[in-house]
Length: 251
Image (tube, rainbow, N blue to C red; front, side, top):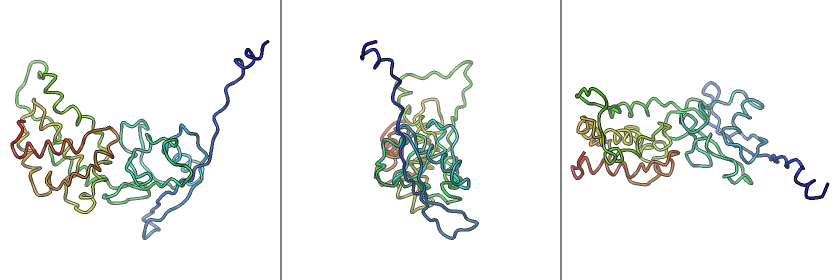
């Protein structure tokens, strides 16, 4: 057998693991008065995600570590957290995309009440979401489907992608400092129906968002757009709702 044939038959080289240090901001309300940082060394591979690292810590080092996760594929949005100071989904953040020569910092998202470790109380977030009436309102009763052109669908297509992870809302400085602000995610979900040609409640939603804690609290910092794991143009959607509120764009 030639050298080339031997090389072709050789087993592929196994991927190499390496150690990553995670600094996790911990908080247990039963024993802690303030959150504190705790360091963990985790053996990982370049294709692993931060969620894999958290699983490894919980299963092999400290079973008390608390965080949310469900689908692990960037669809449910439950594992939103701050990773190296940026809001991300742990299940979509690959280790190879981070600078692992330094510790990776992981903490809960900001602006919502901290319950334990990486878990926050999402009720204030969902309260704002429910307040903008995020459902189709239509009085007609078609025999089959409600017709809509491609152009009509495109008007709100981007905002249908929201998975309610709160990454955008909890990245907003106004939301951090003003507990009454609806926040980007609620406005995005209002946009989805305001611009839906089949819906009849656009004016009601616009009146809600024209309140002092509505769209006019947005300072256009683009934090929300950068934080969105689904690539929604959040700031653009908020601007379109502002325009609609002023009556400068038909809905």
